[in-house]
Image (tube, rainbow, N blue to C red; front, side, top):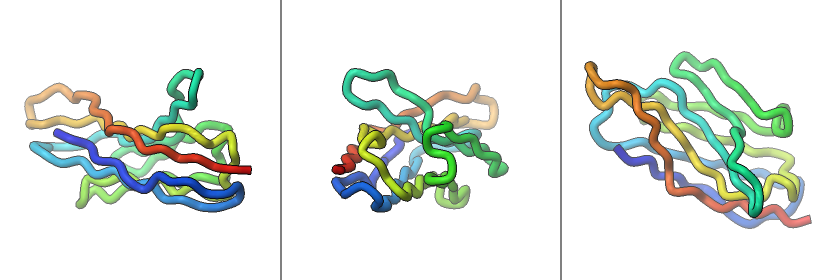
Length: 120
């Protein structure tokens, strides 16, 4: 199983960006999918997550600005980021809890990270 993230970039404060992350490989089912971020000198933190039935969870700092969604048919999770601030600058990682087989225990998989830089 691999997670491939894309969509990062450099932009000015107030702008918008959409991240995508597609899971591929032998996949039986995907439970939660989500996005984390890590800024220099800081711990990795949860940004947003979404369950297989669409229940979402957001960090307080991004509520009202970011929207997490997923396309189960494409095994893909998205993060729409609006009204971006310089403090949103970080490497963004996607994460997914995946069962490779029906009898497998769900495992956590991580994407490679994509850089988001917001200038003031």
